[in-house]
Image (cartoon, rainbow, N blue to C red; front, side, top):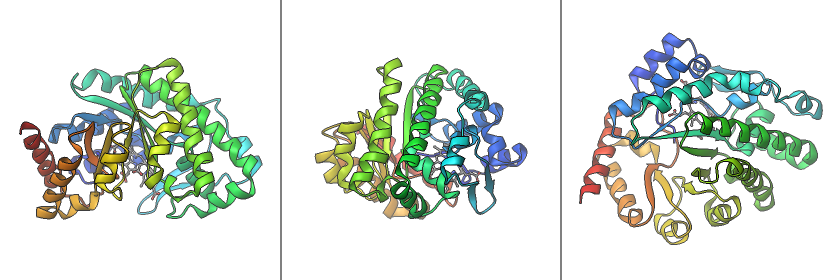
Length: 323
Ligand code: 1CP
């Protein structure tokens, strides 16, 4: 999950110096620094590259801004003509600073710390591209996919190609694990889940594995619920991130039997802290640590998180491991 960001005062300071969030993403020096910030404070086993899933639309030629208090704003690509204007021609040149960041991180982080590269899964990235901003129901994009299915398919195909190449480059530069974030997969009905969440991820994984057969790939089909097992079998992911809603015993019996899982502390419990947070951390460990398991949050860390609560969680996990 996201582990760097606005809850850390040192991040806010660095972002001020960088200028904007996008300047931070495109400065290898600052992006390395911000990736390492959580590692300096806590005993994390992995670092996740500091970047964003929306750099791909920008690299394909779509206008992108991050407005204060509003999040990402893109000029919607919601017609065949606008989608046809997107191009992979400048993709790698545009993303070169990200590859440089991965390369530097590979040399800077300790050998015992895994370096995770990532991208958004095509469906989630497409919801921002077509809708022009984040939304809780992705209605604009879901409707577009019904009414203009062929056009939408061409956008997804482009994203499959761009994302596969982008991730292969990250691996070439030293990413040791890849994570694919499908934050909005859960709102898709059955057939659409197959078409837009499963198929594109299956193809990306095939493309990556053609060059790197052994690279671990973690999928995060947030909100997939009972569809997690099918998703795992159909896409070929190595492991899955489970979101905050997943019942632990069900995960143990139906998912951990198929692959390693990571998750699923509610990021808001990390804000609340205290006994409730500590009890839940132990419950998660008690239920899932007998099988293949990576402790993690069930979604990204939020800005109002007190850093000392993260330290406390890390401490509980380390004490638990010693038992
Ligand atoms: O400084 C700031 O204000 C920027 C906040 C921020 C950060 C820290 C954004 C804007 N992106 C990021 C980094 C980021 N995003 C990482 C890097 C790793 C790390 O921080 O340690 C990762 C993995 C992401 C992934 C991401 N971006 C997702 C998928 C995962 C998830 O959490 O759901 C999504 C949906 C985005 C889009 C995005 N980027 C930023 C915002 C505010 C959003 C959400 C927009 C919305 O409301 O829909």
